[in-house]
Length: 476
Image 1 (cartoon, rainbow, N blue to C red):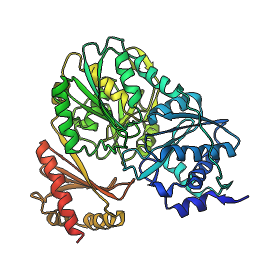
Image 2: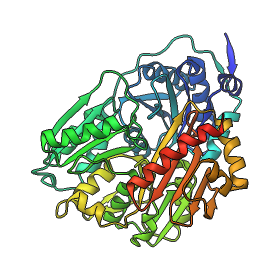
Image 3: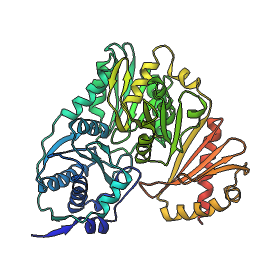
Image 4: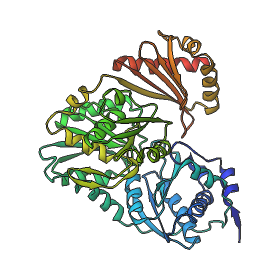
């Protein structure tokens, strides 16, 4: 028999944890690498939890089924039962596993291109922490090399419980008269969303299902997708368009005019509709969250759901209802809450459906456009440079932190008077004129992200485009 050691296999693969799970090229996720991660994960939590089952689900990437089989093989080697839910959204897997008090593994690369993939790990009590990630990487578990992959039978329990979680909160006529378009592409939840909205009375129009994987990034919506939404809205007289990223944990929603909402604005409206007292949000989110004065407390964190979730623990002792969301739109419910007098259980991982439904519940008396327009008028935009080496990003920003005014001059910015800088995550420069420019190397791929905020949407877009164009010149 050929035995391997988990830490050695993982280290040789070159795969590391990013802001959300372990990510890498498909070719790096061999059967033995998937098995090594699984053995290390399960072994690292067995002293804290008792369980005899582990759940697995996947997204629609062509590489995901085989990776799930390799993870399943490792689970079987540990003498545990595999529960396989097939293609479902990450929050659906996380929710059913938390209710059953068992760990789970989601095979997904979220929004990154199809030649990459990843693994997300959940303990019985929810998403793993940064400390758990380090425990997985350093675990020295000896295991037998994977020789054959097991056949997996799909259970529909996760899909059904996820649909019921939301349809049970609202009156079945809540969306009566609404025409909702679902941009299906290759989303892991595309077969669940139509039944969910239809159960609440909506007329659903399916839009652009794809047999090939589509890497939708809800933080950097393409011009093509912006044009599509406007055209669909007009052609089908839609009241709302709903979509998600690849694994269904980040929402992408458009209003009556076919304009996509920024994820943090969607999160703000959802939290307000749920009467959430305290929020934890990443530093890159819109400052309208504080200036709208609808929440008792707003805590700012590093970017990534583990940091938002870690903040929940600090807020829970002071506030009854706690939640968070990210600029990409994923909404995390940090405590049990009441919606329409009905209890909804906490789900401290990114979810796409809850913010969409809460927005629709608000839009019964006012249009979505009016709801957004009533907020403080601060606009954010973000984009990225792909295939930009992380070490180059780090080097540029390290120098920029020493003299941010000079850095802005190198970027040929109109305004170089700095009010303050924030190094919570990357480099966030607050200018004296109220504009904000924020650079951060991605934790998931070799990308440099840029975020900007201003009093006008055109200015925010200009700041991002101008900054990204000129930072590439600094590198040459």
